[in-house]
Length: 488
Image 1 (cartoon, one colour):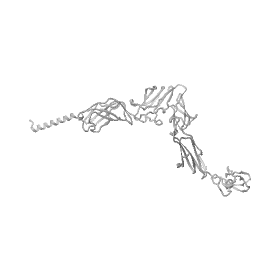
Image 2 (cartoon, rainbow, N blue to C red; image 1 turned 90 degrees about the horizontal axis):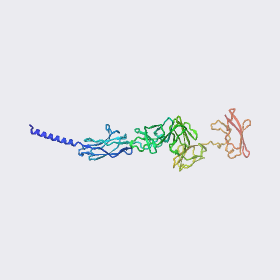
Image 3 (cartoon, one colour; image 1 turned 180 degrees about the vertical axis):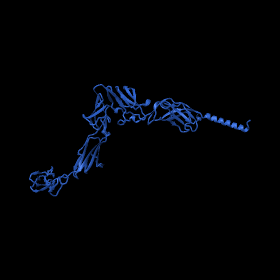
């Protein structure tokens, strides 16, 4: 028999059970299938945001700590290893329907992804969405194959290898720089139609046709495709080898050297203006010159040849001094650059230091040293041409000596090597005659324009010292006589 106390306890327990049962019933929600705000998720670095809308019921069943999350399947729609791609902040979503924005993973690449919605408090999971294509595209711009050479050839029974350039030339954004990407090759069937032929970064071509490659972004494929290459089978004769200049033709050498490329072969030999270029035996040739460049390509059982008339947009220029210029101190050298550059700018340097204010085509070099002169074209093809020259102090062959020397030592040390007489005998009186004889009376020099340069040749001295005799006769018949001892 229940006592009043026990009845109270039973009643309290029944009330507590009923409350807990009601809370348990309230802690259940149903999440509807997510509706996609897109047909395919094609993402890249500048765009990666997609939306989905879902309903849930009852709204009152959510706990304040609840978070809604979006899970994404693998490319086959399997959620075994689902990835959470979005989670809301606790308690931020309380009304139905709800719309969420989310990014796709950078590894996404497939046609059959799905998403589903989950809640954390209480725990619930929706059904999966419809399948959709999802690709993250780290590279989505045209790229080059075959070094932009538009043709290729192979001998009958052989093949031609097409490959994606890595990195290529110029601004080429090679998709091979992105390890997760895959590629598909196609053959044109008409100017606007094509068929798939193979997967991979290369294609071994065995039939004539025009081929190109595309990055495998499935239904998201747009701008990541290559140039077209037309391949021919050579049955006889010599095939035409196309040559392409990486900087175009004409090209601007201000951008650096241009690379000449031809199609793939077994071996190569390049020529310029009909002359073989030593060591130029690769598929590509770098140059900064103009001229007619040709190439011979060995294809095995057949061959190919091609030619390009390469034109440089550089201007013409010259400088009117030699590499080394001699002058005396106090006698500056005037140097002039002549050119046909557009809007030219000039700079002059001495020993590597810019000379302030020296901005004209003509410059007076007053100091000894190493000079650099540059002329730059500032519009059109931006090119700079550099010239280097050295100004040295010249030997003064007519120093103002006081008296006629009677000893010289022509040993090549630059000191007392020649017989130098006072300037009065050859500067102020051009008709002064200088006569030099050996000790046997043989005349070894006779001139009326002595240049202080005797002896000019080796005298083949037979003894340690040898004596010569001189007679200097001025225009008014005044004479000066004496001896010259030549020290061996």
